[in-house]
Length: 405
Image (cartoon, rainbow, N blue to C red; front, side, top):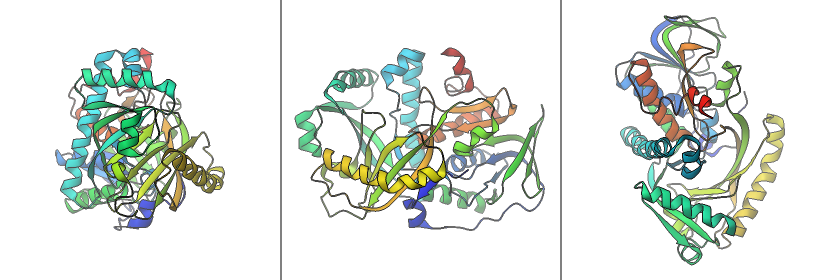
């Protein structure tokens, strides 16, 4: 599955950071993780750190799928508002999801600091009203978050313009967010895992997965066999290939990144990521070396050749949107790209077993705008499943919640 177009910045910046060997023999392990992106890295790291024997296989080079195209905005804010999520699942579960995502930012930070040099840094998050009619819903959202202890404040149009140079009728300013280089974090986690004895194999495609009540047997394209107590399918947006049921819609998102901006050019946005209430939404953040990353212009295109042709036109449109929203901020793309992502109906991920595959094949579908924070939470949830322990997010982040709609 071709998941990206153009020139994703992280892969260009970092290159192939380490060589992992393809699997060339039959293996037996406790947990086989299928997927070598940031989701697979966080899950494998969590399992190995708690004594589980893990083997990781990835069909491409490590990190070369959607991870290389991710824009890596680490937020607790879910694409579905807390207000809307509370109406759908009840306020307690909605707040549970938001609080878990807030905690996940700190957990990602711990991993980033442990492996070092992955451009992790704390930020704030500005969620601005695209239109005047969006002000009331955003104020209600801000009030509900504040009532549950989230560090948020409401900025009126004057405050947004003064601090951020943005023409908007109002915005929610959240104190908690972060940035990271997702490709570099994935590589450095896998490199550490390999040093500590975990087998990591890229350029190894799994073609068959068969599960019984006691084990999972897999066969690779080269004919190698993998036998495990559990398989974790962390193959990103290609994971839906293993299910007959459609659980999310694949879409394309587009991004540009500038050369490092002059000192002070980003103003208040130097340490604050920003995104808007319109759907699909424009979003932006800076990098540790002072570049501006801008994304959005999402569409329903899921055909690689068509997506490839749209990259340059979408890049021009993103620049126009930025000039309209922030006319004083210089935006000249150095690189532009597109990547596949998936949306669930409610903005929440899916982690755990699906009835079609049985209890020993666990899915890690960190879909939506919170992919990395979801992956961090999913790592703990799946470990609890393998260890046969309860987990507070099991139902809300599992396939069973589809029955609650």
